[in-house]
Length: 318
Ligand code: ARG
Image 1: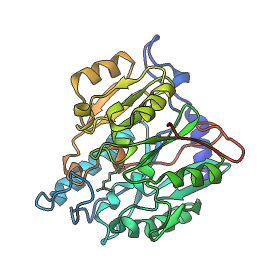
Image 2 (image 1 turned 180 degrees about the vertical axis):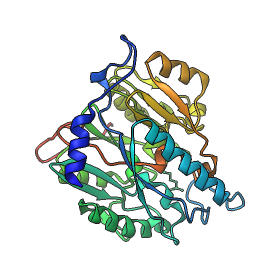
Image 3 (image 1 turned 135 degrees about the vertical axis):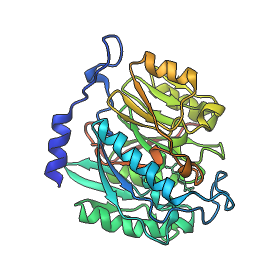
Image 4 (image 1 turned 45 degrees about the horizontal axis):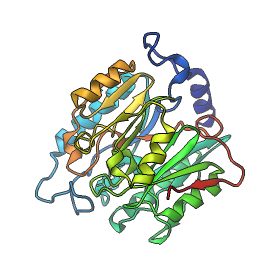
């Protein structure tokens, strides 16, 4: 398994079909071609831990499976690979695979499991831990069973050599130290203040080496500034834009798979050489997640997409 991933990564490169002057082969993210996803066999809204969840608006189970299968097909058509994790019957939110853990490869495959803020989601981690172990990952956790720092992996993405981690609604600041030290990476913390953008992946979407979608109003002022300082050419999202879930997208080379895309954002993405592929995942919006939340990238490498820093480092904007 490890060998396969390394080969895939080595051969993959950052191929691009963009015209000259747009994104080029060398400037892509370099990750985002290999995902774990959880088949929605037991998806429903069983409790309310974010403002989208409403027990009187249940997803249609057949339509959810259909939309999820469609997303897998779109990712595969864009050159991605998907590994499927079975859903626990007692864990309706497990479909949001992004939150299971943060997988990072550094010679060996490692994963920092999430330590969910809400007890309702903590059983997911037990099954996900076994899945990652069977797949050859060395597993660690910043806390578990409610003891220790909370960390939810939808709050963490590599950008500009750093591991950007959103904290506040879900992840706790203390988790940033654990992750920086354990993985020996440079962590840029950003404090999320918007109640509707409880994970970083609702307000920040890395696009390529120069670009990312950023919704500044999700963060406190110093954090928005620190995040924007990492992105030479940000595509700015208003609060209204971000609440369409448009930042909750996945990027495969120059293809961006999105649940929604406001016209101005689409113009900017296309001007930057991206092909926008829209996919309807409406049933999953009822639980407060979209395309990015349904996927968990398995091909992020320390030393390639994240700088290695001996002992680790954390920056928190003040
Ligand atoms: N109902 C889930 C929760 O509140 C939604 C998770 C969305 N996932 C994400 N990566 N943003 O935890």
